[in-house]
Amino acid sequence: MVQVQEAATALATRGMPVAAAHFHTVRPFDGQTFERATAACDTVIITEDHGERGGLGEIIPVHVQRSGRTLRLVRLGPVLQDKELHVLTATLAETVHRQLPK
Image (tube, helix red, strand yellow):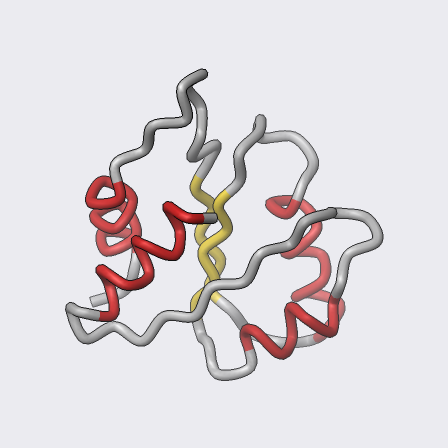
């Protein structure tokens, strides 16, 4: 989450309003927190620290579809793939920046 917060700060300094939310557990999914965190968003970037199966990357699209909202979803991950958990904030911020619409 530290890397995500740092990337959010880096993007905000570029004039991109960013909010970050952390979901400690996937099930049960806290849809109310998700809705509050994304109320003013049109794009949600999902970062995870595990493999591509399961997790928020599968739950969030289902939740968004069921809610009837229209959100652009971008999935990044796993962001903490190496054993030493070194992820350069600039790299994450650049990746996010490239994924967002211009």
